[in-house]
Image 1 (cartoon, rainbow, N blue to C red):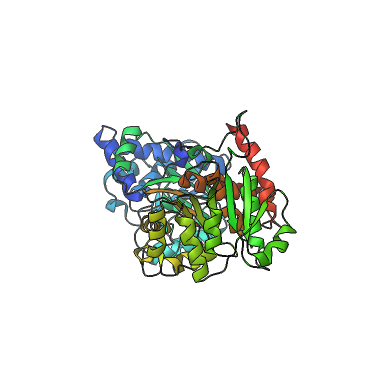
Image 2: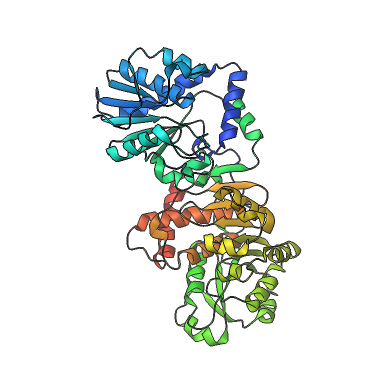
Length: 507
């Protein structure tokens, strides 16, 4: 079994907004003054500003009434000391600033102008209005100011998150700054990766402000879930040895749909083979055998008409990873196939029609998975997710995408891959990963079928479900990024060898 790296790198760690507050509090309690942390944050912002603005250029710093504004005051002072022409505007009254923000403001000796819904000529805007903890919609002058920033066409450096973005959900609070870059502190927040927040953030930078590992551990200790940004450091791909051969690399079985609906299963099977499964078989209805045979070479073919045939086929225990759903058809017959596949205790990937067939019956599906001790991965897009989990707590109003996926995993007893531009992978034990390594070009027919095949192929080689899902999602995204415009799903399996070679070269 391949285990993930236990201590993710700083760029892979995620903290909720509340956990970040605990980190700050723990660092302060351990003897680091809050003003020292703020000065380090402001210095990190100033450093990025110097990279974005021409030397001695004009910088407009927009400060809000809280600690985010305090970071802005520090950055403004450091930039002015470095010879930049700094115009600082404050949303609110300077006398109303409190705590460390008030102390930071005292160190700024230049003028403080009022916030106005008009952007002067400038080379860079620093958005230090509101941080990740914003919990209300922007209105009044704050909203007008953000509108003016977005209309200006000037590069924007956001402090912590672009103002108007919810740090936990990535939701837009009425309106949000469209940043060129964002500097956050200690760790990314979910809202940096979840859409639409990710689009608003631009290029992300994580700055170490000296809180320390003990404070980070204190912040994480109160988290309900172990959250990470999906990246290669979190999982290890199977490695071949001198003794490896096709039977040691696993055998994936993909069920085909009826005649004229077979392409999805073949795409999945090709993905499973390319990712390294030693053998792959497509199980096909008799009427579709000729159609499948005309397209398959290295992938084997076996007749399978119904659940009884599948039960007989699975007497071969070498078939250790199963994929059902792509093009399979919906209805009771598919439910019966899933019940058989879940009953044999193998690795199991369910996608597309296999999920829709259990519309509003996820508890029945969960019982099949639990009773059969299947190591299952579900790969729904938003529509399939809504159908499968209809009427459950996984679709309760107000949940973030991360929370919905996590509840779905707990409810189903399976790893859930909630697909999209911000795919979330959640395990029943509380681990959650957010993937931001992908491209809109993956939004093409059959792309999800290939992803299901990649997961099945990794499961066949012995990866645990959560690690297999995380790895497959990242590899799938990397393949899409390599190809770019014009990508179709048939291209994806053929890109996998180059992805694997380059990933091996990083090690």
